Each structure stands twice: as structure tokens, then as C-alpha cells.
Amino acid sequence: MVKAMSVIKLEQVYICPHCGGVLRYRSGGAVSVAGGQVDMSTTLPKYVCDKCNVYFQELLRSGFFDEFELPQEWRQQPEQPKQPERKLLRTGDIEPMELHKDANGQCVCPRCGEMMDFVEGQPVRIVDGKPDMENVKDHFHCPHCDSVYRRIATTDYFQWSEK
Image 1 (cartoon, helix red, strand yellow):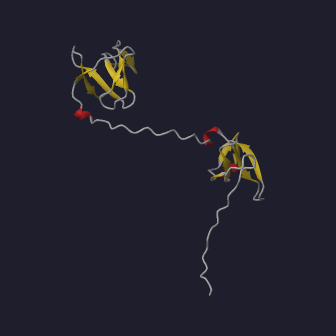
Image 2 (tube, rainbow, N blue to C red):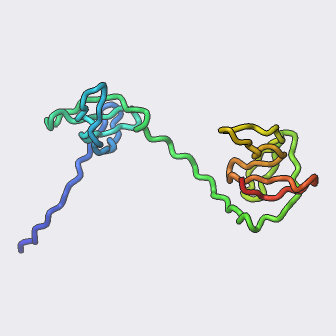
Image 3 (cartoon, rainbow, N blue to C red):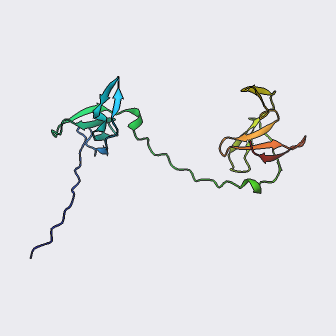
């Protein structure tokens, strides 16, 4: 009984000669210019060892590889544990409320739940020849959801505001 022939590509696995770990494949990029010279080596594929911070590049399709130090931008950062995403309230659902700063000049953001900063009023500044009125009155600013809460008249109530 004869089996039907099919074409299968077998993957070749390269092992780091230093640590014995499996090398990660990185395809070649575009031609670059370095020091006024055309650098064709950037078009060649590379085999990267993230543990040893080196990469290997084949020499003239010979089966022999040259070793280079891994550039900082190619290094893989260890994965940070993902924090659960907080649900942002819609701005239309945020009612005016009393906000009080703590000893550090912060309070909890009603929209995202993170800590936001209290910004004291400052004099008018001239930016590009025009008056900048953004920071003239006291307000809270949340760097996490980029919300701004401005004081309502002379009360302790603050309301979400566009910038």
C-alpha cells in the first residue's frame, strides 16, 4: 500500500551554545544606513538568546554563526502581572460631589478609583502670546484617567470638567 505524498516543512531548532536554551527567531528587517554606509546585515535573520543577551547571525549561508551582543531595544522585558482593568464611569454619570484633599494633596478619583492630585490656582500665564487660563482656579487632576474636577463657585463641591 502506497501512501499519498504530502509536503511538510520541518522546523529547525537552534540551541544557545552558552546556556543550552532554545534560540528565538527574529526575521531580518529593512536595509539601514550606519555611519554613511549601507548595512545589509540588518536584512538577515537572527537567532536570539534572551537569557545570555546575545544573538547569532549566519555567515554567508555557511551554516556557521557569528555572535553579537543583543541591543537593548530587542531584549524582551519580563512579563508584568496584569492588574485587573478598572471600569471607568461615563462622564455624564458623574454628579457634582464634595472632594477633600488629604495631607498629601490627593483624593480618590470618582471616575476610575485611583489617586488624583490637587492643583492649586496659579496666576495667568502667557503661552504662545495668548493667556493660558487652565490652571487659574483650584482643581483636581487624575493622571490615570486624565479627568479634571473643577470647583463649583466657592463651595467644596467639584464637577467633572473638560480640559
